[in-house]
Each structure stands twice: as structure tokens, then as C-alpha cells.
Image (tube, rainbow, N blue to C red; front, side, top):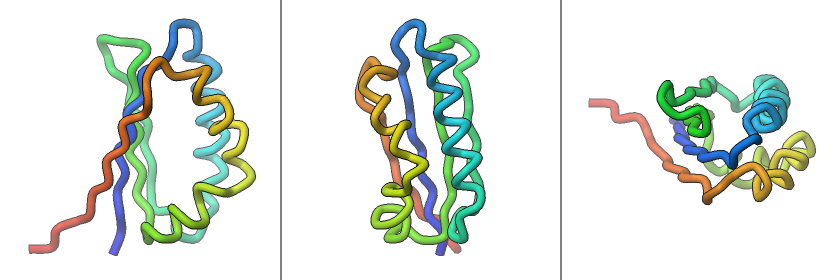
Length: 98
């Protein structure tokens, strides 16, 4: 069963371009992972410092134990304290099959 993640970001002023460059590199790399299903980055139309990332993966344990530790994520994770003005909001959702 797949798992969805909603990750909310609030950027520091002046970090939008760097944020997008780093995240684009991660998203391009993760699209080649076997358990990856989909991802979409959304921008707040009223606030250029707010973003929402929606990711879908096949397996939560794989995301936590393998995907988050991939080498292509190192620069991204290292930059987060400089990019963000507050902690990411991460929500985990599972599909409901009625």
C-alpha cells in the first residue's frame, strides 16, 4: 500500500532560488527510485516563501530507512537550516480503500 507525505516549507527571504535548485535536484534523482510513485511541488499564490511538497511512495519503511539517507539528499538536508525560517511541517497519509 502506498504512503503520501505532505511537507510544508516556509522560506527565509532571499532563499527561494536556492531552495528550488536544491529541491529540483532531489526530485529529479528520486524519480529513478523503485519505490517512488509521484511528487508535486506547490507554491502558495499569495506568499512566495510558502511551498507544499506532495510525495507518494510505495513503502513507508523504505522511505524512512533508505530513501531519506540517499547521498543525493545530503546537500538538501544540510541546507535546510539556512533555507527555512521555521521547521518543516511533515504529515503522513495512507490511502483509504472503502
